[in-house]
Length: 163
Ligand SMILES: [Fe+2]
Image (cartoon, rainbow, N blue to C red; front, top):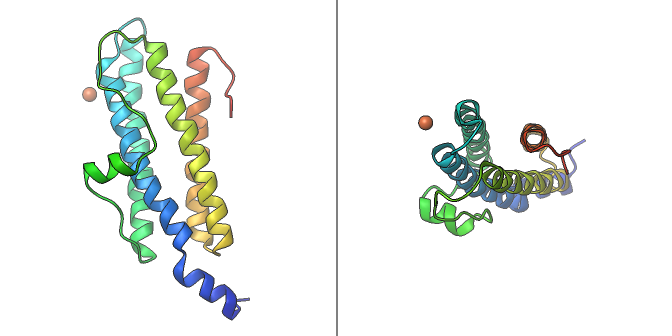
């Protein structure tokens, strides 16, 4: 039943919009990080891991587009410049050098993905609190997809998914 209180809570959805915009910035930067790994990989496994990074980027960009368009759908305005992505994102990225191992690069990607998983949990909580089942569903499925990738990356690294 839609009560007046529920309706008012849903009208603004400020927290939901904030987490969606945070996601836009972080998914953009995560995509740049994976692109860097795609380019700077060097070592055994390159032939299969290089194209795998293309798949990861495609997934990140799909989440990015879906969450950004959802934000617009509920009346928000997604950040869209590289400057905004970099300033808002909490994902860290170094200027690339050739001295990192594949393992070190994968650990950076895992760290970013675990952060995204926590961010999407915040999205699930915000959408619960603000009564937005549709966005909740999107954060839930994005979180599942990100966590599956954490499992795969950590399996490649020879460790259990530390989620
Ligand atoms: Fe490429």
